[in-house]
Length: 126
Image (cartoon, rainbow, N blue to C red; front, side):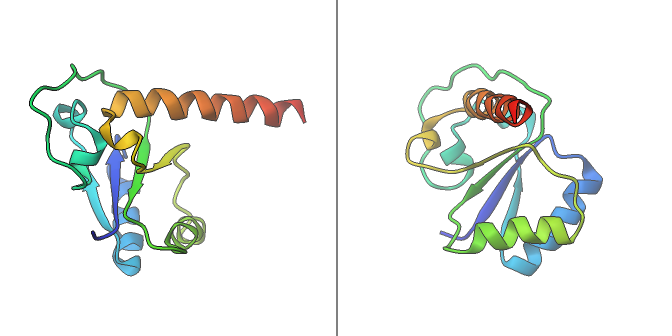
């Protein structure tokens, strides 16, 4: 499978800059539309077939990226390119896994939001 990034709620200007970076790195950009938030992440990433029934979509406004089918070293190159291109950060990022592939976007959003909050709390303690 070809490397891709699923983008949730990314602002147009930032998305345009990300597209340029991804084109250089050979990463396809897939923008998830709000009506697709109910689909499992793996379906949108092309890793699995759509289920017969879907959970109701729970919208969210936070930006979120899901990296799928990345080759070794590609994540580091992507993150470094993000920094070098001075693209504003996206706090919620995840890799597609066998576990989260079956999750709808709101479930992944909830999980990585909690992880992000925990990491922020640890940083404040230091």
